Length: 111
Length: 113
View 1 (tube, rainbow over the protein chains, first blue to last red):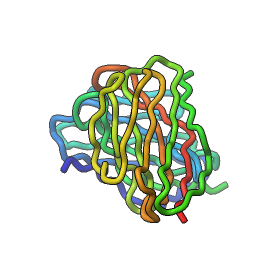
View 2 (cartoon, rainbow over the protein chains, first blue to last red):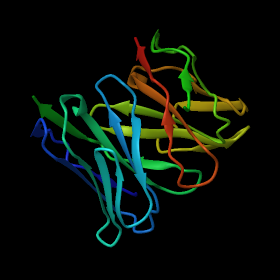
View 3 (tube, helix red, strand yellow):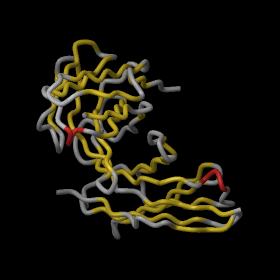
View 4 (cartoon, each protein chain N blue to C red):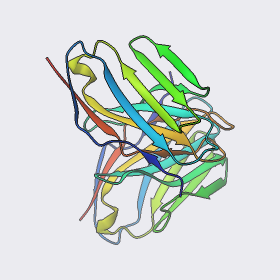
């Protein structure tokens, strides 16, 4: 069974700080990695995806991938209270863009 | 923007009923997915479809079936609803091929009494 592991949190950071969310995966052959944000009672919303080793930046968000260590992370700079949500890491699991999701990390940003 | 529409936000049904959950996407995506999400268990894949009339089982297909008669529409069917199928059901779609991001609908919170 291919697994995706995340710390459940909550991860608490003050407003303006950098939030670092981490994810490890078991399938060394995984090729694509996705971060979703899910507000309480809402559906997951795609934030970023990354395919290659290294960093990928989009606004305040940076995704980092290290395939050798089977590790993917999401950095949120200048965290805002509106960033408070559960962040889901997802990894491709086979054909047809199927994904395995982690159980998510809850982020709390305090004013 | 991708739009995935689920027919109901909240639904209450009785044990033993046949329940239909509908999902429509407007981006001509080949792949469509049904998940359920439960506290502590995360998102679990029930079924997916990669083309009209084509379907594959996910991790927890027992008690469910699906139908995809048109490219834009993917239906989840609970053949005989049971209380342990009370959950949040999420539909998603993605473009064809591998390694594409999935986009989710708003979800249906289903309660089986």
